[in-house]
Image 1 (tube, rainbow, N blue to C red):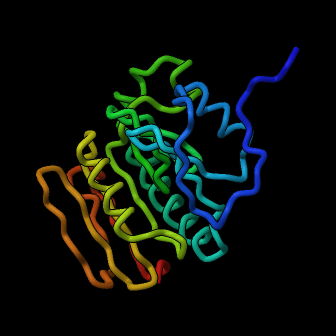
Image 2 (cartoon, rainbow, N blue to C red; image 1 turned 45 degrees about the horizontal axis):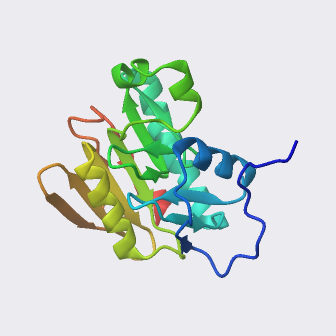
Amino acid sequence: MQNTQPTLTFELPELPVRLTPLVPLSDDGLFELCARNPTLRIERSADGDLLIMPPTGGETGRRNADLITDVNLWARTDGTGRVFDSSTGFVLPNGAERSPDVAWVLEARWGALTEAQRRRFVPLCPDFVIELRSPSDRLEALHDKMREYIANGLRLGWLIDPADRLVWVYRPGGVVERHEAPTTLSGGDVLVAFELATARLW
């Protein structure tokens, strides 16, 4: 039987790149596309465009590992939610599929999902995300993504730019705080009693 599953088989230009499919991809179709192209990080905009990004470089990967470790160690002790890494896709209420570098979801919301939903792209917006800027990321595109998270139910988000030692803290209600080289970041009333020491990020 002929294989009809979507696979990217052409040479891509310099990444990241945005593609507009001739036929909109369903959530299942996008999941299969990602599964068949594990070396690429693929997201979908609310308009259905695909954003294809390269694997991270060494410094970005190291920083991501530090972030996920710190949040996960806190989460294991706190016990009120689950932590997800950058390979996890979330389908937001607006139809976009995003893969934040670090995500945290309340246990009650995760527990309300079916087993089938947990095995595919997660059909909800996380409660907390971290986006870490890599050398290939456009800063304004990351701010757009943070605003999209907030519009879809995010309760707290951190956008971290290691090159310029800047952090933007996003909260509902249009409140955005800009911090220059902070020594710590607080989880506030979302990640209760969590503080991230930022020295390793710079």
